[in-house]
Length: 252
Image 1 (cartoon, one colour):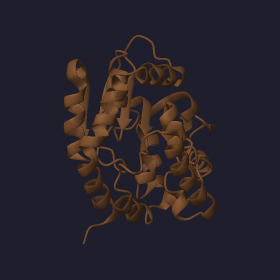
Image 2 (cartoon, one colour):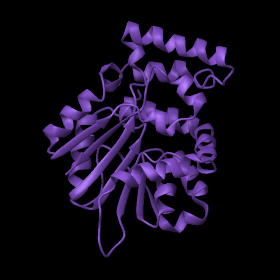
Image 3 (cartoon, rainbow, N blue to C red):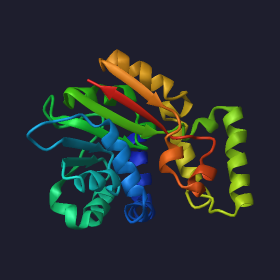
């Protein structure tokens, strides 16, 4: 019988092509510069060498490619082989500037203090043991290194009646505004079944994350609640109004 991690892997394997198309569209739009400016605003300063960046859960490679375009030393990991295949293909001219490695976010095969900056997007809600993952991420950060985690309460509506009604209102608003409903185009039945058993689907975030990061040993923790207002276009803001994207910043 499949465990949760295997179910998540299989789901994203099957979604890799469609998810990659979304990422490629972002790479070819204004969004790449928006994300680049946002991440660079929070990156640590290093002198005399390239910034060492780790993109965890790279998916089709959007963050890795964006950071490689800045000239950084980029390593990108993902649990799903199909996603890494897409990422390598999407990297294009940056292919040789990024180390793509298949790896579990809960257990990183890197030495302590290996990276200056960790970035990740829409990953932690997928994790079976997010607290374990955060400890591992803290371990591989260099002193003064920073972690930027972008995520949302994607499936809190499965456990919260208020969020459920807001989620349905998003579906109505998408139709009313004449934009594509992103949930109609996704196999929500399969993902909802998986999400019901993931710990962060029933946890109010980023409050939970901030507390865990402090307990993990990050010396400075900050939260920005409405990152979606910066990085999402109008269609995304309508689709995800009930699940605003937040950023969690942790400094070692």
